Length: 210
Image (cartoon, rainbow, N blue to C red; front, side, top):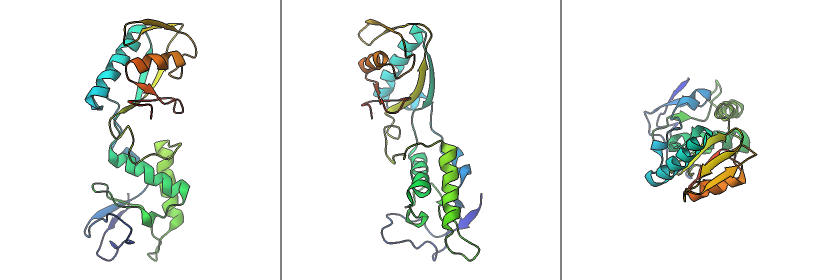
């Protein structure tokens, strides 16, 4: 990845910036290689303790019933949320790379320059688009979300035949098709464990359905 040294001159940003990279910082140009940094956890242990305990109980009930569960994401570091959010805004929403605030600990340079030193907006947007594609982003990622607060889990659920699962009260519920996490009966069971489904996002469950 190409590197850029921040000098006192190029450290200047428009006044609306809440934060700047200090002079002397070595920045790395944006691009798909950033996607491997600050990985999202897939561990329930990284969730908020109370919510994580509820998730563990729900997962245990699913396992006992014979369901298959694949966890895609739990805790998302704020650094990753920052990278995803601003890559999307630059690539898809027309945000100038010069208008992105810096985040401590993320030494990224969003603004690619031409040989003459001027902003190359096309190169900047193409690099951001590479990141969007590599992240697999469909909707604008939030800077602060249930994932960054350790209060959400993305998981794919499936089963064969009828699923006979106990809810948090011990009542056994028989669930047929659709055999996915979008099944309304399964969603109701999850709610008894205080694991709430976001209907519009197939793998997403959280503390409050957001």
